[in-house]
Image (cartoon, rainbow over all chains, first blue to last red; front, side):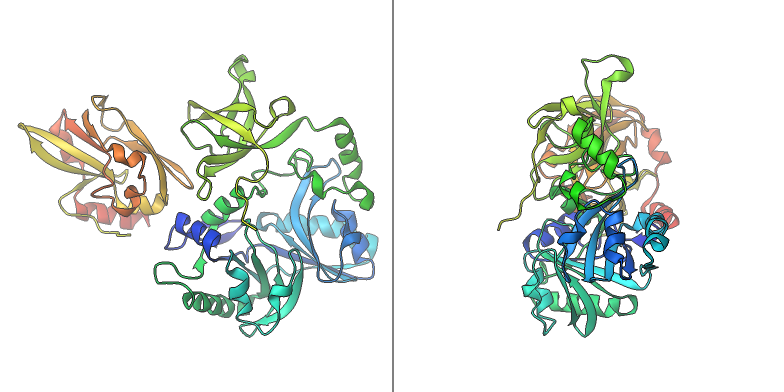
Length: 359
Length: 134
């Protein structure tokens, strides 16, 4: 167990990271992500309040839709990346990263409560979140409900009873696979978890159960292969969405959101650095914090960038990672050098996801 | 995964084991990491080992293990010369977790100072040491 955002969380269960990871890619895995935060914004002007906070377009949302976005500060740095759920025109929920809950709640309240006359509440402690992910996940969860959960489209959600537990079932995830994230009252989470485990045990074999509990380790390798950002590693208050490759969630025409001016200026100028994805071509594994170097430069100038995420791929047969480099190094196909504990290791910049699931 | 520690091995505080055998009158120590170390590290995905013939002093780093989540140094439990290196680990690093005391061995060292063996722990002492760490 390790401490993560104030929670005791397993890095892995008994099975180990590799088997957990493979179960999610080939069958289904289940993650207890109750550490994540939930804020609700309720009131007649809830949509305006959410739009003040996020860079993506709230106007495109409908009841039952979900939207990936970032919240930015005035200088365009990322306060958090999050998913917004529209439950009704006057009722939005935002799912937040665990390590940011206190910061985010203060940010949300300070910027919206009095200005828009809405009620902000922190439902993090009362809400559990269980993610079921993998090619078999939708069928497995659907089997525990009389509702037609398979009809929920990606980035949509519905309320349904699953194994007798009232859930908000969202077709979202953080693994690059299909599946659900199930929010339910904290006191019902154990019952839901056990029902899902039991349903999974009825599907596979003893060696390869239909559903495998997965820890933070597999969550990290899965999200990195799918090239999903991890707050605190790949993005933070000092990185902008344009630098982080998240320009697609910035919609300057959506409204007067915080950070809009700074982001417009950065878009016009172009970002000076970029978060790039790389595949190691030499021998080694890059870890967060390792330096990206240019040996043709002198002294302290040799270090041109920094690795923010890195691991040995499990479904991808290579060591992979993300890191920031100045824009002049950021071209796809470019070769970079990473200082892996004193040894120079070559890597190539690659486009898009490291792993793409089969349609 | 097993958490037992074979009684015919000697152990270090760096969670390595040493199996001593006699050859041509000299002491040879085969080295690996314990099942406890393998569990702590998680699935090992890459192993870097020295070349045969290299010399090492006790306590020095002779290689590295990379798991999915972390990187760990390997410390020489005794001084000497590397006689053999378990090269199949390069292609099958999973042996370190799955079979730590047999297929998962890493190097064999021709001991230059057998008196150093006195500094190592018995299986019982190591089990107590691990229990203290948990």
